[in-house]
Amino acid sequence: MDRDLLRQCLTYHGESLFNKLKCEQTENPDFQAVVSDLSKTTSESKGEEPGSPLVEQFIARKADILFCPAWKTATLQEEEHEEGEEAAEPYAIMPPAELFMEVSYEERKSMLYRDLERGDIVVGRINNIREYGFFLTLLCMAGGLRRDIEDLELSALCHIREIPSTGNHDDPLSYYQVGDFIRAGVKDIDRYQEKITVSLQPTSLTPSLKHIKLGVITREELPVHYSRSVRAASDSSETYECILQSCHGYHNPSVVDYLLEKVGISDAHPPSMMRGLQSKLFQEEDFASAIRKKQSASWALKCVRAGVDHFKHGRHVEAMNEYNKALEIDTNNVEALVARGALYANKGSMVKAISDFELALESCPDHRNAKKYLCQTLVERGKQLEEQEKLVTAEGLYRRALSLDDSNPEAQEALHKITETIQVSGPQHTHTHTHTHKLASMHPLYFGLTINHMLTIMSTSRLCYTYI
Image (cartoon, rainbow, N blue to C red; front, top):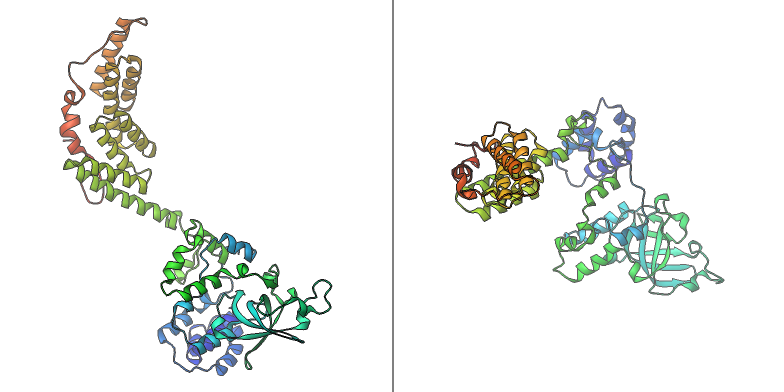
């Protein structure tokens, strides 16, 4: 168990949580290994206000999961250069949450001294220069924790021995002026006397922050979260939501993947507070991507049903819009492709209808209606081509129709007639093979009565097309 994290938790909740932990985690060897240290922490905690019994019970029962040092399920991303990261802004860099909350001055100050650690980075402005160093008015934290503290009016001392010599100057302080912005590392914190000392030496930083340059910075180099805090503080209309939506990183389509990688959580094997979900043996269909695919298919099917209803009432434009919406949600939705193909066929757009039916069969080769409608549409398209004297192409469509349904009498008859026509005409001359009836009147069953019935929903759970 993470000893430091447990200690912080007990410092806040006090003895009542400790007693619950001893009851719930009595058989946990990791807890027993740290229980003696925690006893001391509990005796020193203030415990001024009673905590929530429900929250404490939850923490006690889930302690082995909550405080497990190996909860991360993916390799942590290498820490990037802070300046480059903020410039690219792969995620929304926001002002601290307390800026938008009613947190008292004393509480914020107490939290700062509690959370600030050696090696963290702070940014301040020089307000006084003495022979032994200079004093900073702290503006914000810029490494480790990110917090804006300008309104707390805290000062920090940077001693002359913590200032690297610059160039040929004998006096390191001669390089600095009142009003300069300084990025420095936290050297020491006296929480009782509330004193902070800082350093410009790279050795004062934690290893993960070694790459950050300390010293004088320009106004443009101030942390992004601080600049946005200043803007929010000066304009009451700048709400959390407004700032969030204006951040470039908020609109990054890969932001979720980036943040998961940043904190070491795998999207495939995420950690959970539910013990049953700690298993590593989940089926592929149980993961978010598979579930999302099912949800999209279900949503698309609702659009198809709405389109069918529009079609049955003669609202063809509205029907087409619903079918297109369904295919935007689920690109390969078979029922949407078949329904749209049938609508195209009914409107005489045979080429588009054939394309939709073929796409449907690519996803579901055994789809009965897709096969049936494609066969009929190929025959009708072939007759269109005959009228244009494209006999060879029409013959190919009839043969293709018969490959889908070798017992289709229309395709058989059409192929027989066109074969005779081609043989009689010969290769040098082709007679015009005209029909005695037009496309819409030749097959009223297909283009009239049938189309209204083949787009009928037979049940609420599954869409199917039928003939009567």
